[in-house]
Length: 255
Ligand SMILES: [Zn+2]
Image: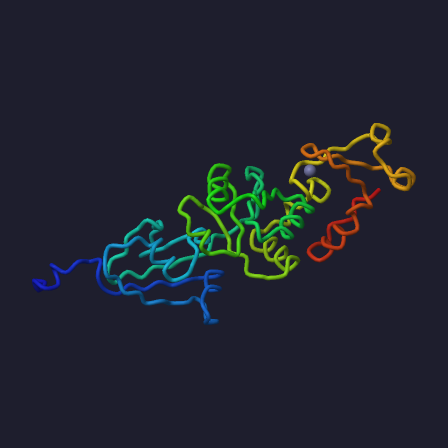
């Protein structure tokens, strides 16, 4: 027989162990992997709550394994649990996959422009507050990119990522790598100003809108289907090429 003491004690009190794997270890000072944390339960608490108390944003968490079974963040751990947390993992895309779509908080304007230059769907407005960002992410199934872990605590956010790097170009490399975006890169497809899609436009039809030298030297033009801005190879083409060469050997499409 189990003693009366133990049998009446709440299973929601006592120690649990959590192992953080992969990129989730970035939120701890230690360099080891996995990071193993012993956590004292005092009451019935969801795993989401515990993980956030430890400083790890819940939208970065993918698989959660307890005793060889998968559980969710809404699970309430009991004494003695040993839980493995793995980061959400991008998989190489299949034909069925829709392209990943992002929404960025208003400190990541430069990263937004870079993502758009490479054709990635990146929503951004300095008018969006945290609540609006979370709402749009939920409604449109967008991944939230931010450096603010507080924003990622919002429950409606399903997928998100706390950008580690400071420098915008390093951030771009980090995001391309973390979300395996290389197959999705399509330069000259999207307007860096507004995220609208670019459509090819006949030079003759916009001749009156071009500066004299542009009229002479360039022949391939696109217009943003959203804001109307006109682009040509030359305006931001070299900039894109420079960025692209940092990540990939994608061939110059110029003909
Ligand atoms: Zn535009």
